[in-house]
Structure formats: C-alpha cells, structure tokens
Image (cartoon, rainbow, N blue to C red; front, side, top):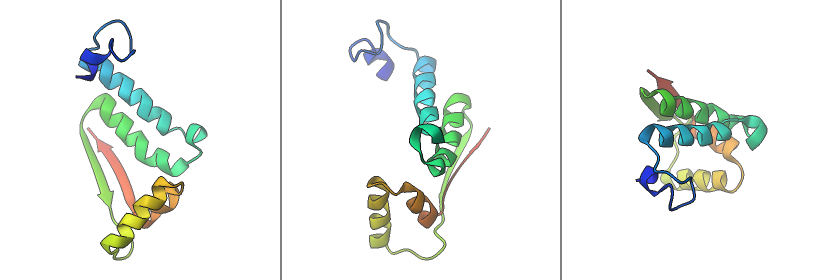
Length: 102
C-alpha cells in the first residue's frame, strides 16, 4: 500500500515497488541505529538487527528478559520512561535484545 501511495504522499512521482519500500524503510532504520545521530548507542544495538532483517530477510528474534520479576505496572512505567527520554535504562531494565539470523 505504501508503494502505491508514494506519489500521493510526496515520496516521488512513481509507484514504488516492494523492494524500493523495503530499501527505504531499511535506510530509515539504519539512521536510528547510528549512535552519532541518536546519541543513544543502546538503541543502535536494537535497530541494527532490524535493518539487517529488512534488507536480507531471515528471522528476527526480540527477547525481553528482565533480570528480576517485573509486575505489569512496573513494565508500563518503564515503557513510559523510555518514551520520555530514558530508553537506555528501559532497555537495561527490560533485558531487551534483538537478533537477526538468515
């Protein structure tokens, strides 16, 4: 759908193929994986495998393994704190890991 809407939303004059959309999205994710651009190296460790998955396909594994039991209310607080500027601590607290394999 994004490829078909490309001309209408200012992404170029022509309809985009699935490969073009995938490449564009992978490029955006790569920007998020650049610690120089985001100032958050912890986010890069999560986004780099996502970009690789988008480019090459394969399997993407997302694991959440907190070091100690976390009640749901704490989980929500951690996620909200991440959205308000402390993603590094949220990644650490949640034990968040992303892996890409072919």
